[in-house]
Image (cartoon, rainbow, N blue to C red; front, side, top):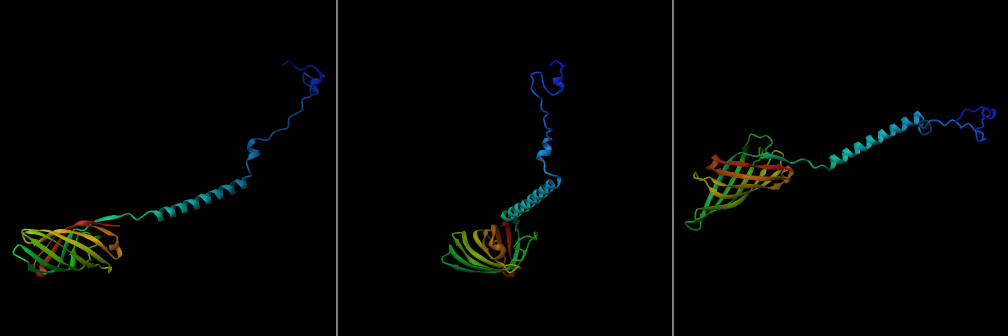
Length: 206
């Protein structure tokens, strides 16, 4: 655009004769849209407080809804006590044996073994049919916390030394035994007070 050489230019009139009205100064955008400092700090503090409360609430809900992790424990050991066996033959090849035992201690290397303090009786019957061994029974144990455990045993064989072989499983009980599951194998035998029961297996503390 050529330079203005007329008096009209100095009066604010352009080349086409219209007055050029000065535009009002527009404040910067950050001034128009930003609250004052005190308001900003208040909003920030309230936001942080809300997030902290939400995080704490979420943590409480998470831990409350997360079940405790199950723990598997090796329960291998040796039970000591006394035993009686009464044979009731039906024939030379068919014999029923009424068995009872009572445990007064259980030796184990694992302090977390729930059988470590268990004591009490077991009872049941064994059938010997043409040399094949079968049978089952129950045990009623009480531990140091006065919690009761009910154990099922199932005979399925006999060793060369005349010891009864079989399997066992936890059926339930009171206290922690109400949620314990698992089982294993046993090897039981001995006369009178020399009776021992060698236990192998694992249980899960749910």
